[in-house]
Amino acid sequence: AQTVTQSQPEMSVQEAETVTLSCTYDTSESNYYLFWYKQPPSRQMILVIRQEAYKQQNATENRFSVNFQKAAKSFSLKISDSQLGDTAMYFCAFMTGNQFYFGTGTSLTVIP
Amino acid sequence: NAGVTQTPKFQVLKTGQSMTLQCAQDMNHEYMSWYRQDPGMGLRLIHYSVGAGITDQGEVPNGYNVSRSTTEDFPLRLLSAAPSQTSVYFCASSYGYGDTQYFGPGTRLTVL
Image 1 (cartoon, rainbow over the protein chains, first blue to last red):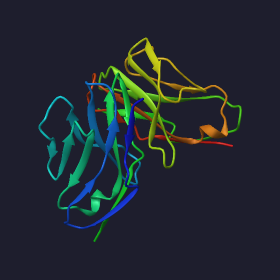
Image 2: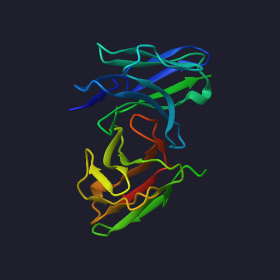
Image 3: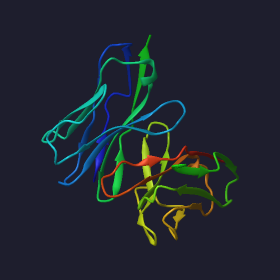
Image 4: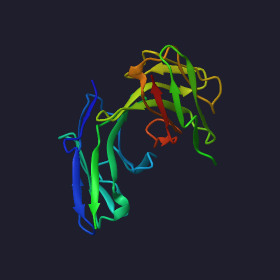
């Protein structure tokens, strides 16, 4: 069975500070892809970052970066210089065998 | 491009009624999926399709039916609505295996 675990239901961070959201996953597959999605109060799901499991280099997108530890099956998201617009629910997901599997989410609040 | 569109945005049903949630994409994506989002449970896959004429079950398929007669459309049918199907439903599409999924705005369904 494929599982995704986000152990931090809620987090908060001061504006302009850095925060890291944790994600671990479990799979016996060797070919998979990892994602972080953001869901603001508007409910729209928005891609934050994507990582190909066969690539050792960690993906980055502007203020967002990941720490991908394949052996540990860990895929954490770092948000630098946090902004008020980063306030949202964040979902970790991985894709294998034509299916996506999502974690239960971390609610992040950026405090002015 | 309109991206992924879903109709309706809100729906209230009585137990036992049937209905179809519509999903369409104009990005020529092969992969399409339906998810339900419940509080504290993240997104769970209901059904998915890897191309016109091909569908398969996800994690929670019971009570739902899908078909994919065209690349653009992927409707989700509730055969006999039950209160346990009260949820927010998302449709998503992606170009190919491992690619980013793009989500529709969601449908909030309440079954009384």
